[in-house]
Picture 1 (cartoon, rainbow, N blue to C red):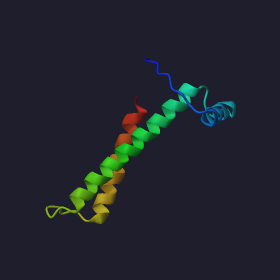
Picture 2 (cartoon, helix red, strand yellow):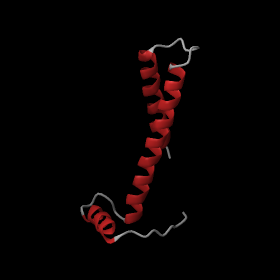
Picture 3 (spheres, rainbow, N blue to C red):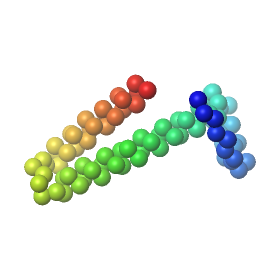
Picture 4 (cartoon, rainbow, N blue to C red):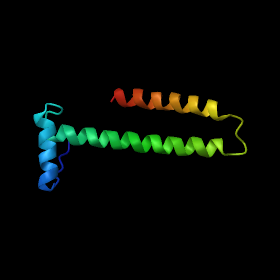
Length: 86
């Protein structure tokens, strides 16, 4: 595993330390990994939604809004299961 050093202003460092003290995370590294995973998930969801909307707005689309919502749910579930396997 690679290491990375980051600099935080004192208020942010205190916040991270507080998260660790509350037992939510075992270390600052674990906290940062969780933040990065959440950001990855958010970006993937945004990309998926943009592609689904693009398809929905395409004149070639034969699927209605309900079908796209169901496809989005299925795709997000697949994405989650792949991330859980990591």
